[in-house]
Length: 287
Image 1 (cartoon, one colour):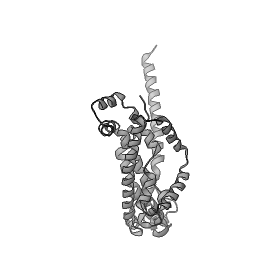
Image 2 (cartoon, one colour):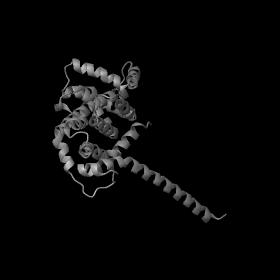
Image 3 (spheres, helix red, strand yellow):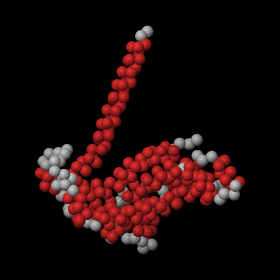
Image 4 (cartoon, helix red, strand yellow):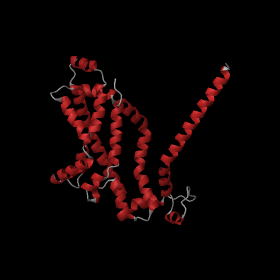
C-alpha cells in the first residue's frame, strides 16, 4: 500500500473541499454586501449622472458629497438623530434595568408559583406584535402621552425574549456561589451586581446592542404615536425626506440619507460583533 499516494489524495480532497467552501462563502459575502455597496455608490453620484445612466454602472469617476449636504438641508436630519439617540439610550437603559431584575428573580429567587408565572410570561411570545401595538396605542392615547418621549419609550421597556435569554444565562451560575454569598450576609442586589452581572457580561452586552439596533430601526410605533416632526426618529425621517424633502426622484440624495442613518449601526456591529456572537452562544448553552 502506497501511503504517500493516500496522503497526497487526502490532501487534494481536503484542498478541493476548502476551495469549494471558500468560493461559496465569498459568493455569499458578495451577495450580502452588494446592496450596501450599491447604496454607498449611488449616494456619491450626482443627480444628473444618476439619471443619465440608462444602464446602471458599478462605479463612478466623479464622486460627490453634495448629496449628503442636501440630505441635511432638506429636512432637520440632525434633530431626528438627536431624538433617536435620546429614545435609544433611555429605552435601552430602562429595559436593561427591568430585564436584569426580572431575569434574576426567575433564575435565582424562590417564590410561590414561580414556574407558572414564568410559563405564562413565555406564552406572551405567542401573541402577534400587531395586537400589542393596538393595545399600546389605546393606552398611550388615553394617558395623553402622544407626541412625547415618554409615549415613545414606555411600550419598549421590556422584552420577554431578552428576559428569557438572561434568565437561562443566570441559571448557569453555580448555586454554591449564591449560598456562599448569603452565608457572608450579602444581599440579593449586591450579589446580582457584584457576581451575576460580571459573570454574565457577554450576554448583557449582547442584549444591550440588540436593543440599541431595535430602537434605532424602530419605525411602526414612532410613526403611529407621533405626528409632530419634533419627535420624529431617523427611520421616520426617511419617509419625511421622501414626502416633504427633495421628493421621490432624487434617489442619490435619498441614498445619502440612508447611509448617514445606517452608519452608526454598521460601526456598532463591526466593533461588538464578537461580543454579540459570544453572548448569544453563551445564552443558548446550558451546563
